[in-house]
Image (cartoon, rainbow, N blue to C red):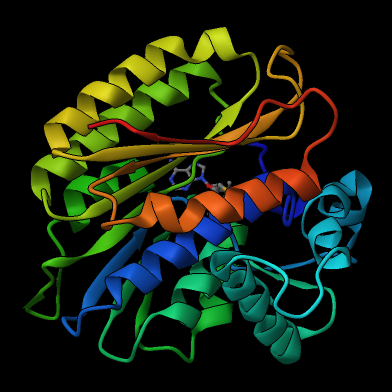
Length: 288
Ligand SMILES: C[S@@+](CC[C@H](N)C(=O)[O-])C[C@H]1O[C@@H](n2cnc3c(N)ncnc32)[C@H](O)[C@@H]1O
């Protein structure tokens, strides 16, 4: 396993994923019942955009840095403003070049009574994650396979308390290329069977669109099984090259009510700021 998220932190895919993640958290927090969040592929939790890895690819320049450069107070739709406010809080605590990973955003958004389980397979990343959250009793870090955690950690039961509400973020590195789509879908199916009322969010890369068709068909069937589903995509280039990540998407199963309507204006603005010539318009599609 070679993937290190530090090379990609803050890129356009992170922007889409993290705007969506915060919107999902906020929708879940609309009710007082405690929430459980499982982050199956957590990464190290915090990144330094001025660090060697991030500067080597400079991917954040075309992601969060470009978004920030075009921001003026209150100019964006609520989900983007929410994300930028979380980023500002992260930077106030961890330095001007800090970028929050999904575990940090979950810990930031959720409440004292909520619980967060983060899985990370690489020892170095898991150690960094433990270090980042050693003070936070809500966050459990597991150095284990996040796909298998669907079976091991769902339905959630933390210290004898069961959680009816919550969310599972599945954010794999796709090092196994197309095979990873099948693994991720199988894990979602397992998770859904074990925790049917959970909100499930799978991030996926978009390279050449036609290779995604089998995944999209299977995703549609899974959404039907779940009872509701949504697919959102943000492309920054035409989706015709198999070599580059031309954009990315999120498959949402059991999405919170009206989350698509809340995200649509944000996606249009992200597209206006981050997409280059020829990029298809953003997508918000109801699957079931
Ligand atoms: C895309 S990164 C995660 C980024 C993170 N979710 C965020 O938004 O900040 C994927 C992470 O999954 C880890 N990983 C790869 N395969 C895994 C597996 N089967 N189970 C758990 N973690 C895995 C990698 O080491 C990497 O840190």
